Image 1: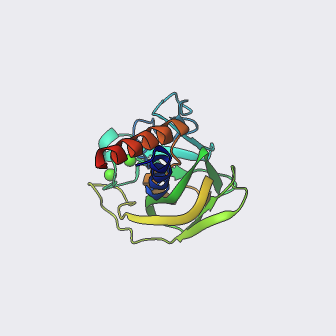
Image 2: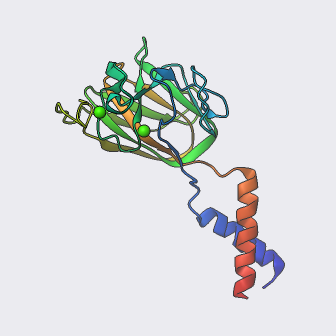
Image 3: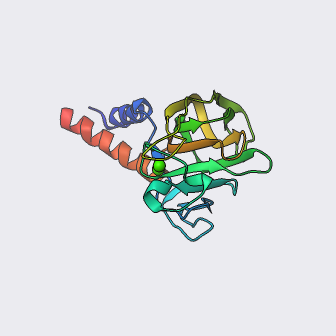
Length: 213
Ligand SMILES: [Ca+2]
Ligand SMILES: [Ca+2]
């Protein structure tokens, strides 16, 4: 096969490959009531916890609570049970009933999260930072059934998954809803491959074509 044809085909393969190298946020490793801030972007939360360098930034409205059956703390933030991903979950504490999650490098495909809700909230996915640009997708999370008695305590104990698929590249996700009354866990972002990763994928595509010759 002609070298140029190989490159063209490799590029076509790149386009055909689902772009998402999903990043999952599980809210583990924080102190109770710690603001997440840049703990998933190479920095720390408000109490010093450093989790990863995944390029995802949380406004000060997002905090983490740990299940108080496991950590023996006391507080409404730990009133959870049967969390889908570890013992830590996220809630919003915002005077404006609003918060923003920024992904400066952008992400594609879809955003999703597990949630346990006692009140309604709305999630919007935006093409620009800080809840700006075009609205790419949205969902309304409605209260799902909550009963007393979790593992053994925790009234946020029924978890569902909300998914927002979209076209294009998103740079932020906003939350509109009350403080405390919605808990989140296992939040997934599809991400645009970094330039380095794209180059490696291109090399892989060329190698694949050469093996098929
Ligand atoms: Ca519990
Ligand atoms: Ca968790």
